[in-house]
Image (tube, rainbow over all chains, first blue to last red; front, side, top):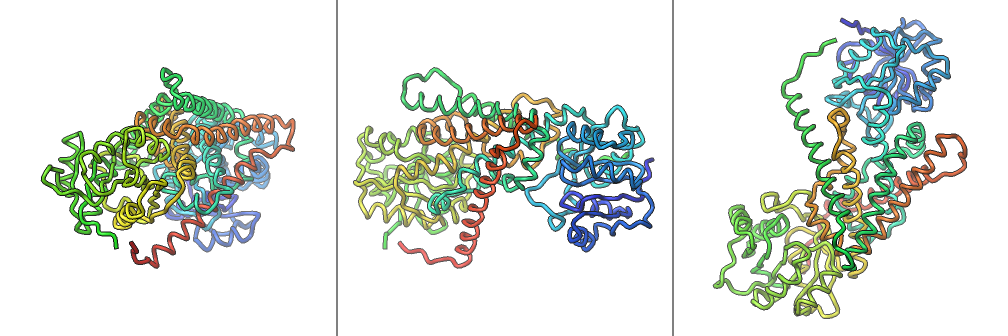
Length: 300
Length: 300
């Protein structure tokens, strides 16, 4: 049984504050720190934990919840300050983060690279919710240096916040998030960008479909450029597939419309493959529904 | 005051049946016809109207709710059968439909090309809802031949079902739906298609963001190929913009990641333009919210 009594959260944005809120429900002592004093103040007022002070004993787990480009540095500093026994983070890229942790001189044995798959287009502590992670996958990518006890501790924490933990290879994780999150973000942005200079007549015609397709494009552009750059090759490969499929569909539409050649089937094939993707999602969602009806006991 | 006592609906799928349900709430006599007997039966059972028979007098308005490629033919046949005084349709492309109506020998003076902007990824009469059109824009593209009284009649019908009517030029309509509906459908399909052959581990990581972005890709591929082909040039132009933006973003990500050149700003600019598009949507939605709080009287 992994003991989890004290958790320290570095970075009290949406994710950090939500973790604090979820852990407080289980009576875990949560200490909070952020370079933005008002963010910590808000998180404390929401009862996500108390301010981290020097007299607080080292935590069982330190969760680094800062923007991806700062994780290596903040982790290294946390380890130098001996803030806890084990460490994890929440960034949606893992290979680049592990490399940056190495460059920053971190001790990889106590560090469990992590990623709760529960983003939101909202941000900041004020958007935090204790339920943010419930029934969402939380992936961990332990390195060859990661201590098994560190992994156990991170797994226990993810289960306490209601997530479904999943251990996955670093490259597989980064490819999966390129598919699941990073490419959809860029594609949604490219669609929403079509309306950056639209007149009010055009805008008056918008419906729910377009709003749903573009919703995630509301994310912070600087943070997202950072995320996309840290996972550049995996994202670029997937984005190229989408761009190529779309360009081919556009070319075929012109040909179909002219009635020159009705033998090519790229558009209908793309739509059928889209249907098949959606059908796969439905299978997974139905599975989750069944799982949530027969809730397994938390094993840690 | 336009009198609207009898409406005949040709095609009892999602849209036709929903119109019937909405009109029945106002006591309008609704007659229904579909080449699929079971679709009519379902629509009648849902109380969207009664079966169209020879002894029913001509309607004030006939609403053609069949797939876009069949509108011209069904409209021509309805006019030959003298089913009503005025006619409208609900297809999401207008220029190609008007041309097809002309080719089918329709009388354009009694025909008001229409398009309620209230699609759904669901289909068939069983998915119908009387509220489908409430506070949604319903566009009309009268031709130079359209009688003003015909337009008045179609406007009155759209207001009865709760929609916000809007008269718009045919080309502007087709460009707007290419932007608002047709391109998002193709883009959502290209994203969902990435998961057509995914393994269960990858699929287990899906979250709400991806589900929202891809939801509309569940539409019928054959029907959607037809719609996209009928609006081919307008759609292809917009899809090319998206494909070009995405390809450029992918190329820049590789360069940014290699640290070769940090001076280009295509990715962050695309994300900022995406933010601006979303900001425009929010302005429109807030406007609609205000409108729905101070409901104007229906003027017809």
